[in-house]
Length: 509
Image 1 (cartoon, rainbow, N blue to C red):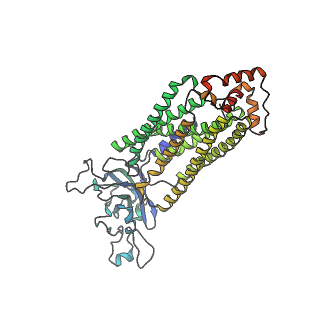
Image 2: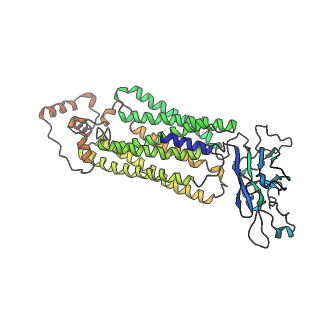
Image 3: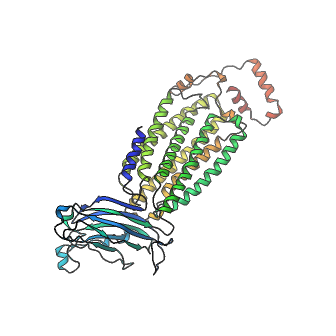
């Protein structure tokens, strides 16, 4: 019930904007210096070839279109005409061309009386200088309210984008009497290949590739499960669940981006399903790794008293991950990330760290059990598993450092064309670890030799106790009739290739 309430809260907060169709619903201006500003959106846009017969209906043309933009002021201040209300569109490299100062004083966006005396601008207008790369930019245009006029509509206009860059739109006015002005309407931003923001465009092809990769992994895994269905262990069924969730997640993300690119409106339902499948997959993967590290199904039959703790940690991680992904994806419109995201990242990072600590602590205990009982085959599997986890964590830490460096150096999103690599890398890293785990625990005719066997008289309570006090257990003497059976087993032709230690290990189990 709590999760559904959180979903509704996230959806209600995101209805103001949808995808590349930036909608404004009675949005208010904010005072910034001597100007009143409203941020209309920011997106990376790839250039299209200049066209003398430019129309926004062309499929391969990049543009920003203004539709039904209406400015409305309170009735009590409508008894006089207003200063102009401007729409300012500029590429991020030209940000210093917006605003100015007189005699080296404080920088201002609106033309002051001192600047007006210098003849640089007209009092009350937005200050800007032409771009060094294109004299037609920044694009500045606007409307004003006449006396006794409550609202005014900005004429429909399309701006063709012929230079690749991160574009910003601001609505600005310099009239203090319009401090309660609101804006309604929408702007439409389009790239040559569709309506996906430039930062997201490569991700559509990436998720298509990942969908194919999961299908290939699924074909291998499901065929192995069907071939050795009598030998399939509960742990392998858990891996089947993770692979299935991964296939669904990648397919949903691809369809989400494809629909987004086609219509310019992000399909909210598909996005929520993609986010939910992804959160379930990440949670399941972490729980499975923790269970394997604790020796579940290998050196212990159950998790015992740890079951409730593992479930509680998993549920907490799922909720934190779901909220983070919903805030980041549902209703996302601009290529600029909000600072509020950091607030939702912190709980996920803390829970991830808790998972890692618990996993390696459990692995240490499991290693001691395997060494004590001389289960050499299982010990070798766990050694490879631990090495894979260690490499994964080291690579993750290195990538986190790079990500922090990348974002600290890219304050204005000037490197937006490479930003898609960051989420793509995390998907590739988790997929690589899944492949390693699947290769170690793939179903085979020898699967049962990796499973827990209670023939030695071990109980759940004993395994639980071993987590805290790991003492050397002296193996009980093997009865004479079992020694005889063991000797006869070694002489069987089918077992000639098995190492002696492995046979002894299987017998102990």
